[in-house]
Image 1: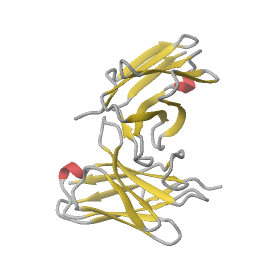
Image 2 (image 1 turned 90 degrees about the vertical axis):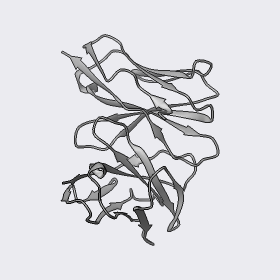
Image 3 (image 1 turned 135 degrees about the vertical axis):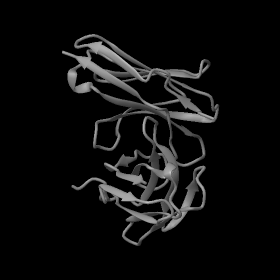
Image 4 (image 1 turned 180 degrees about the vertical axis):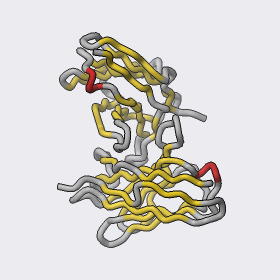
Length: 113
Length: 113
């Protein structure tokens, strides 16, 4: 039972354009959501997060949107750069359960120069 | 400041054997979590150690066990290895079990033949 799903295994975007990565979840107990970026041979690195009490969080070129009613979140990268090419994981954390993370399957983003 | 370190980088074992993976947390961190990332999938939570005790556990059999030492470093042990245990094993550290950012190590690639 996949509680966090990233339905697009890969995404290709031209440099300078917007990248939109999507994530769906099923567990209503999730109240905090995170995006991680992973380069080959490295561990995932934290990118941006959002609490369930918000619907948007922005950090430079990265913005995460949360739609609680649809149980959907998305990561927008504007403008996309070739160095953004990596695998992006969506993760969720339930309330009152410490910091155990449930990850989606990942989306490989390729930004073409 | 060293981040999370893991050893070894790669490991090859045969079915039925036992393996021990090691993790040193980021300086100042006292909590270690272990994740299994199968090929093409997102990381899956195995368990978390804090104050030398297992605090949370994911859906993994008791062939998977761990330990945390007084210096906060940790070991992951897997007994009676199966082919399906082949994966990247990621260690993540954080400060306490509360809602704090987790920092991931580069992982140990385990191959079971």
